Image (cartoon, rainbow, N blue to C red):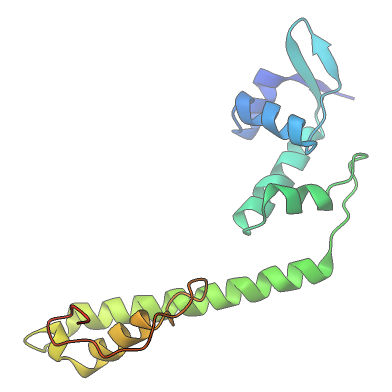
Length: 151
């Protein structure tokens, strides 16, 4: 078993030593001992750090990631959680695609003013009702004035 000190793990993984210490406190990784004041890790910690990075990139929180990593190095993947996260990502992709399309329309719109463009007004109304951000409750429905003040 190859043993790496914390500086080598940080160098090879790109994860700062402070983050490695934090992950150890959270139980995501475990050191195998110390050499003086330096923590030592089994080389397998690099794969575990890659799994943590993958989980974070996929939108999982550290507690969710920790629940999928067992202390003995095995994985305890919750497939239902993976499906829910994939569904969340699908919703986010739809939202971002709609926002991208709206921005492209606004950038190319030939109306003298965006507030005169029917498509832009529909986008504006959807935003006012919270339809563009499913995490925010919709605003009270009220007409948007021509000046865009909402009064």
